[in-house]
Each structure stands twice: as structure tokens, then as C-alpha cells.
Image (cartoon, rainbow, N blue to C red; front, side):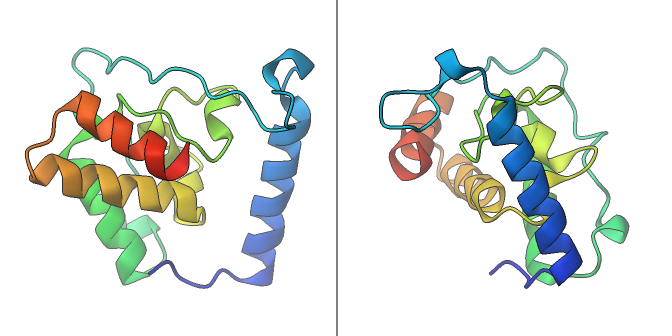
Length: 141
């Protein structure tokens, strides 16, 4: 269960989200007013979890730290998943793994967290990357 963000956190995430929406090129929007879903990225060769935010910097929320720990264990899988919260179309974001690095969108975004948990669970069940992508698309796409 994600932690309850402070007002400041909520305002910061809302501003980032709205800024991301305004940054989408008009051609990227479908007729229904939603972003057109792009393809899942190919995992980058040799990708590691070296840039995933360490637990000590996550503010102590046990659920968030657990999700980051799960992602840290399978960066080569998470790097092959497109994030569906909208951040995938922002500069500097390559894959769902990007949400767990740098500014750490996944600290506050329930979609990033949900996708990370789903990917981890399905990977532990032995699902292939294609099967995981299909499940992520069915739930969040």
C-alpha cells in the first residue's frame, strides 16, 4: 500500500504530471484525449540497478522501500516495460526502470509502484517478458 504523500509532495507530483501532459506533442494524443500507448522498450544490454534510489533515501515508507527492492532485483526485466503513468513520454525516461532512478517518480506514483510490483510478481512466477508486458498493458495500458 503506497504511503500518503504530504501536501508538498502531492503538489510537486501534480505539477510534474500536468507539465508532462502539456509537454506531449499534439500528434501523440488519440481521439479520446488520452496519450497513444507506445511500444515497450527493449531492455538495454548490461543494464543494472546501480541508479535505482537506495532505500536510505526513500523516506522510510516500508511499502515503497519494498517495491524499490523488488525492482532493484530485476532491472533487466523492468527496463523492458513502458510506464503507463505518462512519464514514459518525458525527456530522460526510457522505461519503468527510469521511474525508480533520479527524481524517483515511483516514490509517489501509484501507477509506477503498481507496475513495479506486478512485474516483480509475474517474473517470480516464471512469466516471460512478453507475458509480463501483456499483463501490464491489460492492467494499466
